[in-house]
Image 1 (spheres, helix red, strand yellow):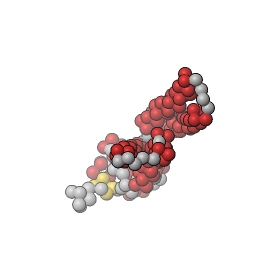
Image 2 (cartoon, chains in turn brown, cyan):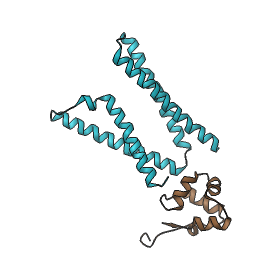
Image 3 (cartoon, each protein chain N blue to C red):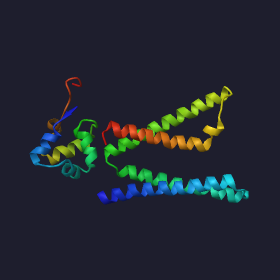
Image 4 (cartoon, rainbow over the protein chains, first blue to last red):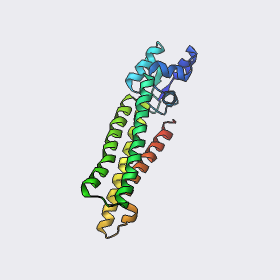
Amino acid sequence: MKNTIKVERAKKNWTQADLAKHIGVSRQGLNSIETGKFIPSTLLALRMAKVFDTTVEVLFQLDDTEA
Amino acid sequence: MEKSKKTVTLQSVIFALIYGATYLPAVWLLKHHVFAQPVSIIIAIVPVITFSIFIFKYIKAIAVMDEVKQRIQFEAVVIGFSLTAMLMMVLFLLSLCGISSPGWFGYSYLLCYCWLFYFIGWLISIRKYGL
């Protein structure tokens, strides 16, 4: 699964720590999500979409092999 | 909120240490001294009580962790439990074959292996999720 968290974060000029604080996870946890090592729950994905004022589909996309 | 999460996690670590601090002296006392049976039982129960409190605090700590840390703990416990169960099965089967070594695989050693397997699982999991 791909994600655009880093891009959305850069748009807001937020560090990982800033975003982690907004969505209620640890910075290391967020790093794990951003690098694609951990797939977040629907709740966390929705929270992330809300703070970026976007949709989950924009933040997370299936890989070609997963589709 | 973040502070209370840290407090709960710290409490579980403190109670793990308290458990260790009661278990080791209890084992030492029971191994090296002869007490009346009621006294022995009281000494044996103390680490059981501290372990129970530790488990309660550990479960509370897991409940307030973020989902990445919860997954890491979950996988560590699953790996630790699976390896311990496998070791016990192997030891049981070997004992049926007449091969056993209580010197290395007695009850007290099994407890150490259980903790060792948990930490192996924890290391595997934190590497997997890049923490």
